[in-house]
Image: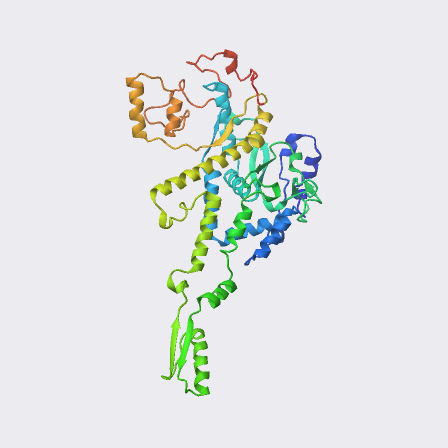
Length: 476
């Protein structure tokens, strides 16, 4: 059985009307080994792929998900492409930025951003969960993680008493399906492969329990969404089993053998010539009399000629996989046209896709993770945004020289926070070892529970900087 019974508190949690209680405890139980992979390893034919896609069109996706995953496990090029995509979109540093209606965020809004970064730092399994959302969403159009919440009991004063997600679990994409009546994405809690019986709508759970990242990749209906179909059709022709390679060698790579004998030769000489032709390839060598001439010619475009048609097909399919996942080929294979200008264009295309996919993932995380955190713990406060750090560090020498001219020559006021952002230098915290002297407790350092002691800043409205005052423009 797949389902909710694996957690001893599941029944009581689901029956409870308390949203907070239902956020605690893991409800997607483990899967037995024999249910984790329905696709048997081995070469697949186009007929196999067509049959799997027909099952997907009927809403049953488990075997297709297993099949696409098995292709990655057997193809180093495909694995590299998907790994690069995961690192570009789900990897790297994610930062919290305050949501503010003002050009300069208020102290309380900056504090909410620091709280969010502290929450994500405490979330176990978060990097793996991010990669799962990015990769599974791109392949199959949806990826899901489960969050187990609990009351923070650590030493960070910013999170004291907060009810936050503590562990992130990846939910296998194969455990989902589409209901045949309306095409809705449901979780298979029974293990039958179909969600028409025992399918569970995860949206019934409180916000923040599950994060489901649904992506527009191909623009087709939801059952056909994702790059998995493209991957399957391209990768099956790169994944041959031993039988396929032997058949290819027998039909395309075997050399032509021609035995020549005199027209007056007897039947025994003719039979010997035929035997020599057969044995010269099977055995690798043969002894022959002078009365028989043997000529061995390798076919054109064979592996021995260095211009194999199979090699060209293999490389062409690999380049198509690179385009499907990364937008270009030069990041994985330089090829004969790997000029610097083409490499820069390919990198620009890759960055455009990275920004697009990262923004989509950030939108999902804000709605399904960040907002629930602050609606539970700080209702009325603007929830900050959790976004990937896509910027590049400025050249320190050139930047500082230009900054000296602006501040010293033109006497232009420049915010130190902006300077730190350009140079990717984190804000100093009270008690840390510093270059250039200790941090003045009155001029910086991490804030505690309140925003008192903020000297040197005069807000437009003093009441706006109070944590006790309600936000006039709360989360919409």
